[in-house]
Length: 170
Image (cartoon, rainbow, N blue to C red; front, side):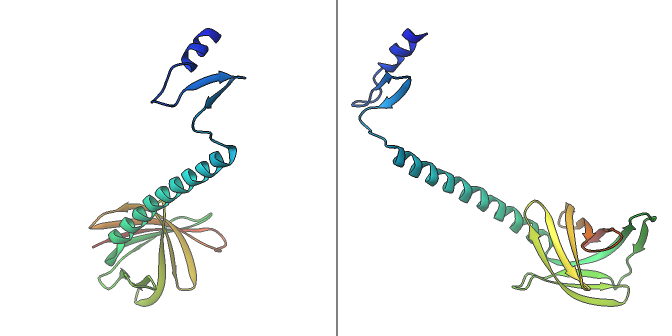
């Protein structure tokens, strides 16, 4: 095995660069790479990887936002309070969610003759934070298309735990 490694180490790579085996380490003789250069190179490579990954995630959040912006009719809302049966509210013609594409990320909601103005934030990974009527809902978007939006939300701070499943249509 040592003979093969020795032979491989003496193979010339592009002109002027060659590898040699000394004390079980490969050494690029002409490049003279120092430990500090290695660290800087690793840091730069790491930052480039992070930048590319985060830009992909931003694109994902932007595409979800594009899908939900607009006025949605409420088909139904299923509310489950821990330890109780699920209660279903069937939307009427005047019920809607309107997700606005403005700086405040406003959402205008009309439910059961009550109107609310709140905010929404699209989070990476098809998550949505929705705040209205003094409560924050952490939601997972389960279906998002041009004509249908479904998400399951957990009401933060609710005791007992409350989960709401929203079925919205265009």
